[in-house]
Length: 147
Image 1 (tube, rainbow, N blue to C red):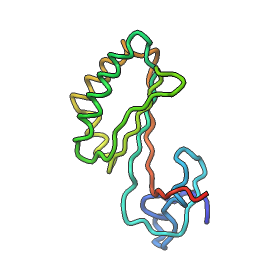
Image 2 (image 1 turned 45 degrees about the vertical axis):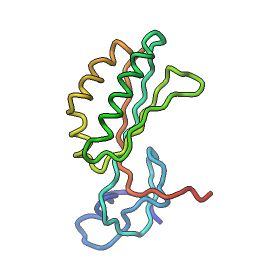
Image 3 (image 1 turned 90 degrees about the horizontal axis):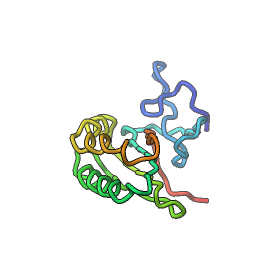
Image 4 (image 1 turned 60 degrees about the vertical axis):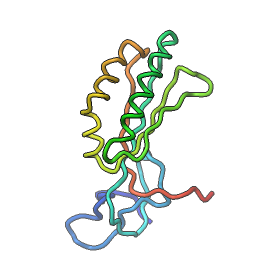
C-alpha cells in the first residue's frame, strides 16, 4: 500500500500510463488527509457523499422539519440520487445532519439548481441559529468494517 500523492483516486497515477493504485483501501474514512490505497484499478467513478449540518432555533424546529421532509421526498426522485435522509442528534433535537449520496458530481450540481432546494435554502436563514455547513466527499470504494 502507499499514500496518495499525485495519484488521482478516480483515474490512476497519471500521464506515465503505468497501471497503479486508485481505489481506497477498505473504504478508508472520508475526511482523512492521508488516504491509503491498494493496487486495484478502478473501473467506475466515485460516489458523491454530501453531509450537511444545521442547528435549528427551538421555536422554528417544526417548520424546519416540514421543509426538510419536503426536500428529502423531492430529492429522492431526482436523477442520480441514491440516498437522501435527515437525522437529529439524540442529545440535541435541534441539531440536524443530512446524508445524501449521488452517482456523480453532475447529478449533485443539477440537484443544487432545483426549485425545491432553492425554496429550502431561502427558508433556512429564518429557521437556523447560524449558517449550515455542507461538505462534499468523493468516495472511491466502500467496504464493511472488518475490525
